[in-house]
Amino acid sequence: MIETKHLIKSFDGKKIIKDISATFEQGKTNLVIGRSGSGKTVFMKLLIGLLTPDSGEILYDGRNLPAMNKNELNALRQKTGMLFQGSALFDSMTVMENVMFPLTMFTRETRQKQEKRAKFCLERVQMKEAADLYPGEISGGMMKRTAIARAIALNPQYLFCDEPNSGLDPKTSLLIDELIHDITQEYSMTTVINTHDMNSVMNIGDKIMFIYEGKKEWEGTKDEVMNSANKKLNDFLGASDLFRKVRELEQ
Ligand SMILES: Nc1ncnc2c1ncn2[C@@H]1O[C@H](COP(=O)(O)OP(=O)(O)OP(=O)(O)O)[C@@H](O)[C@H]1O
Ligand SMILES: [Mg+2]
Image 1 (tube, rainbow, N blue to C red):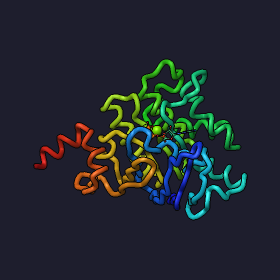
Image 2: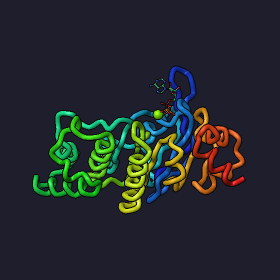
Image 3: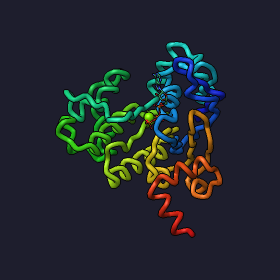
């Protein structure tokens, strides 16, 4: 479980993250939703330690990230998988080499064992056949799957995805969502996903936090999101075609 307590972050005197206390549960896909500019990416960077909070705590199974020493941070890094906007694959490396990268960086396993693990991960995302291709030779969805294989190579306990569906068609988005959801349950990871894809909310929103102008405005499950009385949340959802249709059908 990951917990934040009274998390605050400002840039140039302007508060961007305003006192967010939240919990992200193990074995669940925890979604963070909100308008563009509401603070989702900044919040995720704070969670990962890519940004330092002005104040507040970020607890990884009870241990406070801002107070960790270098060794603790390194250990945590190895238990953390990340999937950022765009796939951030290395263009000069094959699919297989991309997935091997964290294994060669962070483990002292034999080459043979590393390759076995990389192959296993590629198989899990159904990318084994494309192992020898370069990122320039595969589709956007395949790049995302490769990035997922790389993210899970070290068997992470924590997985962070910032807009994993950006640039993908709805059908591919659904596959990627389901893949992330499945591996989260399979490996009992604590997964946090930033999204403004309403399909994702409905499909894999085990738990949803809605951020509005840097504040936690609402939280609940995908079943609760449809019937919430929160006006800001409803305004946000109202902008989505999918939600309008579901609401119309219900009335
Ligand atoms: N390094 C930075 N320096 C100054 N301001 C920043 C920095 N990073 C983010 N911001 C500001 O923080 C606010 C929140 O940005 P953030 O990227 O977290 O939004 P977001 O919810 O992820 O939006 P999107 O849905 O478009 O990705 C924005 O106003 C942005 O300009
Ligand atoms: Mg963002």
